[in-house]
Length: 344
Image (cartoon, rainbow, N blue to C red; front, side, top):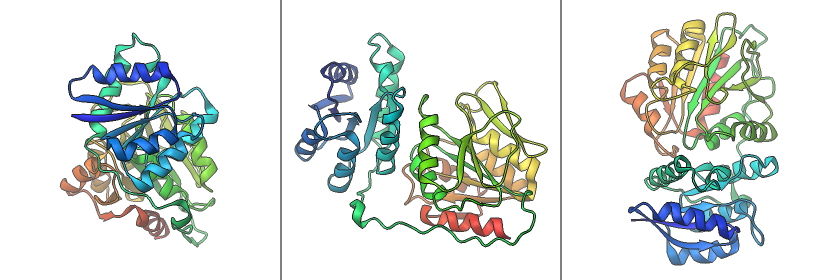
């Protein structure tokens, strides 16, 4: 039985979440809290397997509650927030950076008759139940890693590109890497991050506030420039085409994904060949593994995040087992390795 603690200041939302979750025989709502302070008191008593966390609450908000729970009683946390409130979106990703694992759009759940949203919530709860949460250090003890020092000679590096693929745990991983890259990073970076619909723009805004390097959503026919990170838009396939430009297409899902990491990586392999540097990060499933194989076949470089630093080791593990990864690295070493590959 998966025991869930629901945290939300809205009695209606607590009732909606409780009804949805209790409708599944494998899930039990063990308790309800109306703010973060109440949640902190309930967590050690109830010992829930999963927590659903609202962000905007009185007394103590969801971000502060997430910080405190992850330092004292680490528990998988699903943020339940509304994508339409931009002011709150930043807090969502701050919570994710501190250990919350995923986010779901509250506004869809408020449509009581929306069966699909209820099924998505139950699926996410069941998936997150299998994830081990890691205790976080208090903010005043967390070691900030310094930006990497590239000192790249003034030579042409437009023949290189970095491509990354991530899913669950990806926002934390991407922040860890991108915040260490300098503003004048010498080549472009393209990324597929599987994320809940409606939260991509907020994710990009948050990364821009936290990182020196520029981050944006990729646009069709856009030229890929050095020192810019391009995230694949929602519900389209993103490729890199000849001339170092982005191509977006409304085609079917590829192996269940749209955008697909495989599609992106296979495209950089064909266009950049030896100049391709592919990185596969934390996430469930197989997306990106076949793309890593294509990069290897065109003599590019491939990196994978190691098991210990992954929230979910699925995607990197598949690529490693296919023997298409040059180096397996802890997340904290990934930025330095990318810098070395760009230099030489």
